View 1: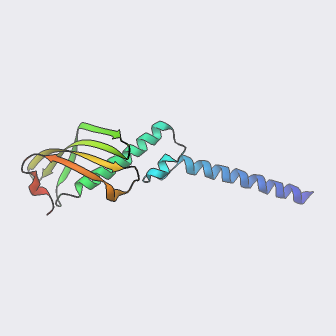
View 2 (view 1 turned 90 degrees about the vertical axis):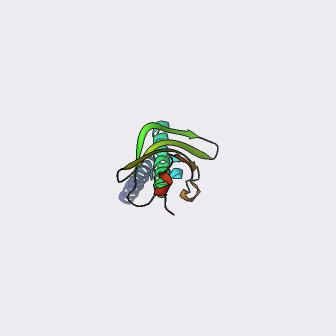
View 3 (view 1 turned 135 degrees about the horizontal axis):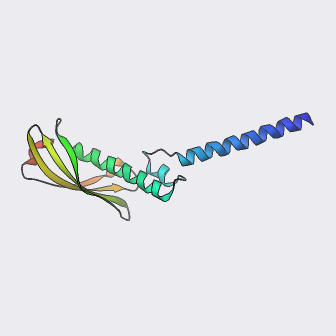
Length: 137
């Protein structure tokens, strides 16, 4: 009888432990992985905010990689829109591009694939004339 109580207590503790671990994992997804965010138990608003954060960071990183070292890219805050498309998220951003004492304005439209593959990020850029000298060769 004592063995059955110990076995039953162990089984109940295991079930509770698995339930707690599963709940924690599903409510705290890897915030760098779109699939993890989409399959989590976050609320709709939390999922959307997390996905948009990944899209913004991925697009911003890809845009900044195009410039020579020492160039600062600052978001102006005038445009900061994300729109969900069939196969991607489209992010429109307006920026100031600064190098030493020279400044340019620009904007870009970034398509971030829903697959989350950073290699498939595409960016269309519009910059002030003369800013092309700041691009990597």
